[in-house]
Image 1: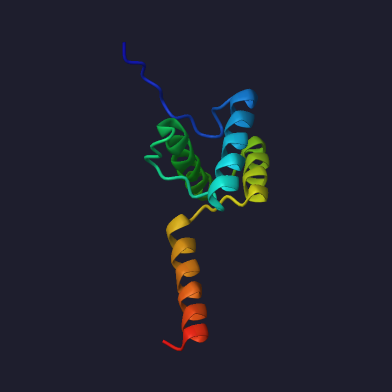
Image 2: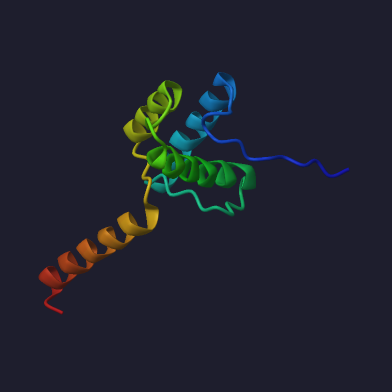
Length: 109
């Protein structure tokens, strides 16, 4: 039968599952050169959902009084060391603008 699986954010995931996701993220970055896993990642939909949930949880933690929990702060640091980006659309836009400027400088148009 069908198995329901809820994407758990970084505060609700156990250490073993967390380490497995971190390894998966490192492998994704090695293969793709970035940590921008699509929400609907066809190779592993639960992984894409986890990345999306992690970004959402980060935004909630930033708005909360007192900020992030100690566990979450450690996990934020770990993700950032890998190169995880919290604002994908803004960073992606800025990266594309920079590439466009380089192209224009090199090719003159």
